[in-house]
Image (cartoon, rainbow, N blue to C red; front, side, top):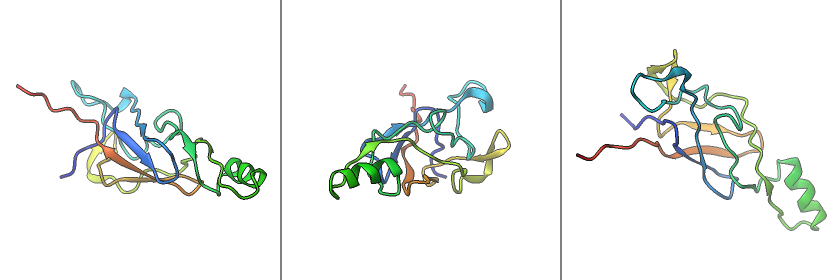
Length: 127
C-alpha cells in the first residue's frame, strides 16, 4: 500500500512554479497521529496552498498579463480553484468516512493544472 498523505505533505502543480504544502485540519484525526488527509481535503487556501505563480493561459489573470506583454507568457500569482474532490484515494481506507489520500491521488485545478503529492508528509521515527 502506498503512503497515506498527511498534514505537511508536499504538493506540486503542473502549472505552478513552486511546490506547496497540504494542510489537514484535525477534525478527522486518528488519535495520537498526524492528521491524515481524505479526498475532501481539497479546499483552496484551507487545504491546498498556492503554488507561487501560475503559468496556465486558462487562468484569466495569466491570459490578460500575457496579452498585455504582446504574447509573451507572463505568469501571475497562483490562486488554486479546486471544486472537485481528489481522485481516487483509497476506498478501503476511510478517514472521516471518506477515502484516504495516497501518493497516487490527483487533484485538478479549474485553470488546467494537475496537482500531485510528491511527499506524503509522514515521518518515521528512528530509534
